[in-house]
Each structure stands twice: as C-alpha cells, then as structure tokens.
Length: 416
Image (cartoon, rainbow, N blue to C red; front, side):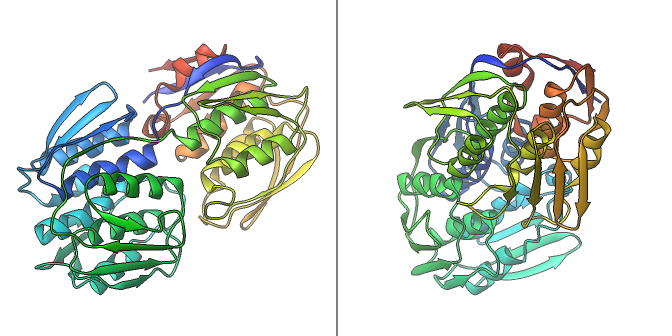
C-alpha cells in the first residue's frame, strides 16, 4: 500500500495549477446517461474516483473516450442499467447514476454506496424524491431497485440539505413529465455547474444556486460540451498548506468566487490574499493567528475544509474552537495530529485546538480523503520526517499531489 514521505519544515513557495473539481465532474459524467448523443467534458481531473465512474459507465454500455483531461461519453448503447457492488463499494458518488438511469431507461439497480468513513450519509432523500415522482423503489440485498414507465414532475422537499440528493433529483426531473420543484436544495457551486451542463444539453432549469430549483421536464436531451469548474476544495487545501508553512504561492486556474468563507478565515489568520482573474496569491505571516470555524452547508464554511484548518490551527498562535455540524465522525484525524505533537481536545462535535510552536514528524494514518489532506499539511509544517499511510484516499480527490507540492518546493515522495 502506498505511503507519502514528507520532509517538513520548508515554506511552500512558487506556482502550481488547480485541477477540475471532482465533486463537479462525477455528477456530470452520470448526466451523460440522460441522452443518446455524445457529451464532451473538459478539465476532468485524473483521479481514482473518476476512473471508477468511467469504468462503471463503460460496464453499462457507455462508450468512453478519454484524451488527457477531456472525456467524451456516448450512452447511445446503454443496455445494462446496473451499478454492481464490486464497482461502487469505495465511492459514494455511484448513487448519482440512479436518477439518470430510471429517468431514461425506466429501470435501475444500484448498489448502496460506500466511500469515506466520516459518518452516516443515507440515500433516503434520493429514494423519497424519486418515489414522489412516481418511481416504484425496493431496497433488496444491498441494492436500490427503481422502476417507472416515466417519471412525473412533483414538489420535492428534502429533510436535510443534500448535495448528491439535489443533483440526483435534478437530473431525474430533466426527463420527467411536467414541472418539478426541489425545495431545501443544496446551493453548492458544483450543483450550479451541473445545472449549467444540463441546460447546455437542453434541460430547462432555473434557481440553481438558491434553495429552490425548478425544472420543466423535456422529452429528450442532446449532446453538449462543458468545462468542469476549478476544484474549490483543492484550491483551499493548497492555500492552507502555504499558510501552515509560512509560504508564498500562486495558484493558477483557480477561482476565489466560491471560496469566500475559506478566504475570510485565512485572512483572519493573518494571510495576505490577492485574487486575480484566473489565479489566487497567498502570502503567509511569520506565524498564523488561531481561527475558530463552524462547518455548515454552502455558502458557510465547508466541512471538506475542516481537517485542513485543524492542521493550521495546530501550529497557530492561540486557541481555536472547531465545530463540525455536517458529519458526526469527522474528527478522526485529530488523533493522528496529536501524534505529531498537536494539542487537541475533542468533546462530541467540538474540538479545542491550542496552537503549539512546533510539530514533529511521525508516522500517521489517513482515515478519509480530507483527513489525509490535513495530515499532509501538518507533515509539511512539522520538523523532520512524516510518513502518511493509506494515501489511496488522497488519490481519490487530489490530482498529482506530489508533483504539485514538489513544484512549490516541498520535499515529498511516494513510498511503495
């Protein structure tokens, strides 16, 4: 199993690029199931989760053509509307094929998904919404089996804000008969990016980016070309890495427009940030000031940046309080940060972090994707060598991590 060896203590300096957003690309790839015409996506990152999704789509009968960061999908030969457990056990985003499959094919069997062990992420909101649109659904032997002659538009209200639930129901509604209204919808930029892609394919959608999305169903969608938005979480991760190490970096292909909550906290910590047209610059102070955060759905502070900020608070001046309100099991990285010398106390969904003058390298184990990123940041800031185990999580969400960090002056290498 691969590990990442980090020789820390060096400030990150220089320039590197930001890849396309994984959380935008994954639902877009499944949107290709909605049409018989080819759909082309550019700026698609090279990640394990993307590879898994493309193999899943190919198994269903979709023709997949990948040329670097450009992917063309042709679902005209779709004939196997099944997502088997073996293909999707490591990736929660696999549930996103459910809505498009039942909308176009009238039949879908999708294994209940896996993914990171950060807490319960039930798919009941997906099921409830599709049932309201007329689908007959049974959960049997670990699979969700949905059938319907044609979905019918409906008023849908999700009990909680769910990004994948909003995306799944929005895609399904594109081919439903009549109008669908999704209330309490997720407002994330990735939802807006998917909506823009669907509109390019001929869908009629309004309100994406607000908590009420309206979709007027159409008979068919057509092919289109769409560019995946920059990955805001990858952007935030590299900004945090530079901040924790006292660095000075420029990220190209990045957008600050979807990072307000993260940028505000980094500036509160003492960082200088300059937004350019297609880039972001960050210059860190000699030592950061501790900042408290509370995670919540967009546009508030993202849960996917919580571990990275715990890492920078670990070396900041002062005490911070971190409250996690999204996932109940997302402090597993705290124990590993303590192995590096961090002073962290956990009480339920709250962490109290007292900054220390120095972290020291040690062997740590990644427990999920964003926890892995937090441990890498801490390793970069620590003195000595840090060995991060189980980095297959990182390969799910960060394209070319070692190469990008090396370009910024870090000493990192993969140990097989």
